Length: 211
Image (cartoon, rainbow, N blue to C red):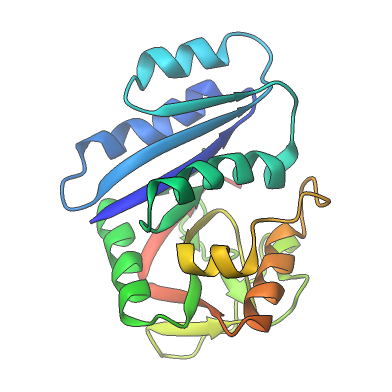
């Protein structure tokens, strides 16, 4: 299965390389790596290009924030075709099996526009995954209100590791670049709902995030 992985780098080449390098060994999932460098200082671009020669590297001339930087990567991903798009923070860790599970969830549920795994911190505690509160995404350690269903529909999700259906983006549009950082995922979640899509958490998939 193909997936486009969009990762934003800003003065974090070491983390970006550590995050993406293990993905080169994936077999069931074929990742197309898109790294957007948000006008980092120093030699981040050179480091990433040397360590990840197979990745598509987009060096922004200015820092476009999370929304703008992510959009530059998603524009490229959408131009490649219909593979789902994984937005991934460079301080997050997700295994191939989790991504495969998320892809299958989108395939089985076309009404789901975005799906995230359960997210744990470095101590193994559940952190931000999804919730009912539109302001949820900025409450880093608030746990979501999940029942026992493996796939839980929520109103808003975290952007730490989120798999997005390209068909949704083509209808709804990309992230609103008026939001430089924060609130952009809540806004996209709301617009997705207005177009008939839902957001979900798949509890069978897990990822970790350094808080």
